[in-house]
Image (tube, rainbow, N blue to C red):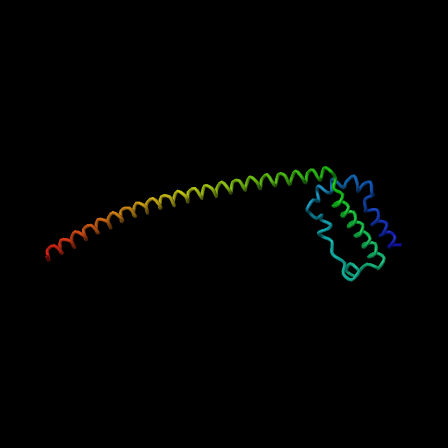
Length: 158
């Protein structure tokens, strides 16, 4: 008798097919990506019975309830409504826009950094060219002095 009462209570707690279809859109919006409190608190069955206090028929009805929940959840995931698909598409478009904007900002910052490096390298290059020119002039002057001194020493020996 108690078993029948338990199974009828469990069956009456399930929503009818019309209730499920009408409330599935609302539940999907609420549950999207989140588990319900009942799913979080549910303790998995070990060895066919839930904590060893229920009889075989009760655990069978609990197993049937779990299968009904799982199959109805599976239908919700596969059979998305057009509004849900549109929301999903809009979210994806928004994420893509944000991502594209971030990529443009990163590219701009990278180009600014490269331009700064170009300026630094050009400045260093001009400094090195100036130093090279100075050293070449000094080298040419020293060669000229060396040539004059060696030529004067050779004339002095003669």
